[in-house]
Amino acid sequence: MNTPFADQSIILKIEMGPDQGRRAFLPDSEQSPWTLGRSIESSFPILDSQISSHHSEIRFTESGHQIRDLSSRNGTYVNNEKIFDWHPLSVDDVIRIGTTELSVKRTSDHPTPPTPSSESIELSHTILTDPGSGKGPERCPRCLQFIEIESTPVRRVSCYVFCSPCIENEDAAGRRMKNLTLLYELGRGAIGVVYRARHELLEMDVAVKILHSQFSHDSTQRERFLREARIGMSLVHPHILRVHDIDHDGDQLFLTTEYIPGQDLSHRILEQGPQPLEFSIPLGIRMAQALHFGHSHEVIHRDVKPGNILLDENDIPRLADFNIARAAQFTPASQNTPQGVVIGTLRYMAPEQLDVNRPVDHRADLYALGATLFHTLTGEPPFNTDNRLRLIRDVLTAAPPLASDRRPDLPAALDQIFQTVLAQDPSDRYPSGSAFAEALAYIG
Ligand SMILES: Nc1ncnc2c1ncn2[C@@H]1O[C@H](COP(=O)(O)OP(=O)(O)O)[C@@H](O)[C@H]1O
Ligand SMILES: [Mg+2]
Image (tube, rainbow, N blue to C red; front, side, top):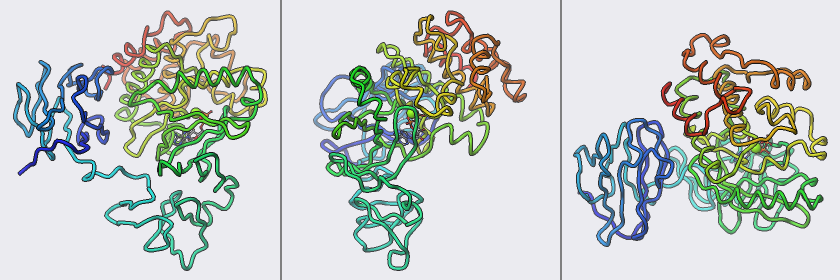
């Protein structure tokens, strides 16, 4: 029999449906309404076209959690029974709304995968004890291969044991910055170098972006960066990378964010080529909703591109670098950035971003997301040449290409969407991220 619960951390996990794998903590106090629905204003927004904007509500009471339907179109079901009024929830109950099934779990029943911690970690039924303890099997956190500690050269960094090839050329590995120990480089871009790092006090892995010194030594840049990072930190959304903190170690500014174990969209496309519609359309919808959320907080991203979309192990995307990208754009200092980095970004930039005399608003982000989605589906951005001047000329003057010319199996409705979102004149594009998301939802 299921037991009610009152004072434990309880999560909802999406077991089935377009958002499969996502989780959320249920409220643990009698706070404001906690809702499930398609709207991004919901406490746990779920991208399922069969779910109403405000579908169900969950509350915390002295005797446990309860759920009710909010007059949704398709109803709320608990263990296959339709519910009408407040209904108690128990561990292992299954909630169904639209085509989505969610299970109710205790956090202790459901350890957070797969970031290893200094306590025990569970990896495909093998319990590994205390990484770095020297007891039991160890796994290199980078390549995830098991290591024979006795017979293989290894290197310990923080609580981890790395296999030698993985850490050999990592000059920064083991370097301390405040409470962080750097582990290894995840990537580098126009703004700085990103490392996976261990937060020694929180005992969790984070990503740390150490900003190029041009940002810390120029006081105007530094101020601008800090101002924008502060705003960025206030953007809390399931599909926007969470920024934890901004700090400095001496002169060096760094930003810590959640660490996403997975890969970014540009690597996904490089490795696998054009992506199927079933992957690309939900991704486009989620990113359009994330942009809408940022825009409704008056924040423009300015650097939407595949490298700024991080996919977790369930392929759930997070939009990274919301708001800090502006610091890297066409400042005199940006001439120091490698040519490839600037060109990489140019391929997704709206025409008005390339013309200093034209105002740039949120519709530049919609264009960039359109170009990103075009790349995801066809394997190439709409305009693609290594010649910087020709690229700028194409973006400023040429009509957007047809996606179906490059990939004939794509539906004609997608061509129409790309023609709209990649329009030269921002007023011919979708007016908002949610309008773009809605147009994509017709395809999905
Ligand atoms: N939070 C993170 N978790 C995991 N990988 C990340 C994270 N942030 C960035 N990366 C990786 O580092 C790369 C470089 O990031 P970044 O410096 O933001 O480059 P860019 O300027 O091209 O956006 C990303 O493309 C991604 O592969
Ligand atoms: Mg980035």
